[in-house]
Image 1: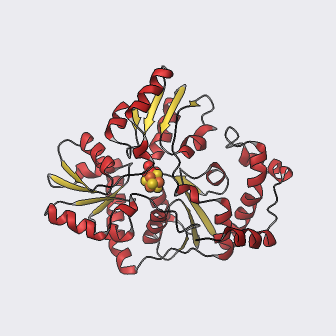
Image 2: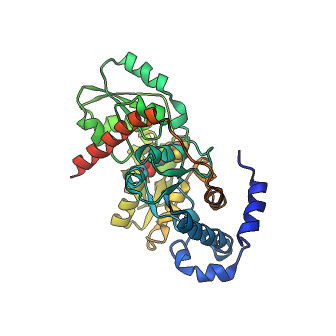
Image 3: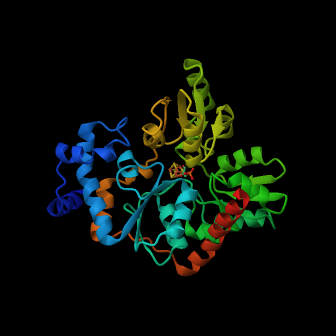
Length: 350
Ligand code: 13P
Ligand code: SF4
């Protein structure tokens, strides 16, 4: 576990990290991208870290790949690429800089390392896991293969490198239904998210989909009744869900999609009021780009995503610690499953 007291005093002796309204005002262009959700006193706290990280990124020849669930100060302040899991995986294949700082969870850093193995991939906090990735091992995949002989295994990217290596192809929430529909065979094994699998089964009725019993601790907490209540209280409200939510929740929503697709939907439809049934940072990060949209309703925080902070990013770049390693043989097999997904989803989108 990272010792934050030591980190703070060590960083404080190398960088000027005192809150500064003057610096915050000089960096008003960055603040303007998140002004709706970031009061100036908070920005005065974050600005010194953002300035230090952006300078250090150049010195270390590093880029920051950040998931849509990162806090606004990470998402708008220090990121070179932002996106959903699919976009970040594709971006990782194209990185030319020496160092990738993965602002997201551990499986995302592993995916970057698998796809671009010569780069140093830094994870600011190794404990940023994922309830889905923790729910299955390679033995679980073998168990499913034994139960459904001959059926292809589609594993969500929210899995470890070992699980990807044991799978035939990966998917993300952006392409799961298209990948499953394109595979040969009547029965498809989907791991580890039972809710994503059931949502895909509803969209691809021509396939028999069997699933592992995993779930996202953030999205499984929403209920269909929550959505109905919010609609009753706010007539005209549009509701957008992530497909990691249970199927009855997705059925109550006006649209369901990956985090990038949620953003795309809001930007295209420009609803007067919208509720994003997903992680809280999603609405915060797209709020300023959609000033006429009012974001309402409850959201849940992902305790894993929230482990990534500006302080830990600065520490990992300062010390160059937290490099993610994947056994090369495992990486070779995992790369096949991820690359098959990227190739197939790009072919299907063409
Ligand atoms: P997306 O691929 O939709 O960004 O989702 C990743 C994730 O972890 C959502 O919980
Ligand atoms: Fe995993 Fe859910 Fe957190 Fe995404 S939101 S990283 S699926 S626990």
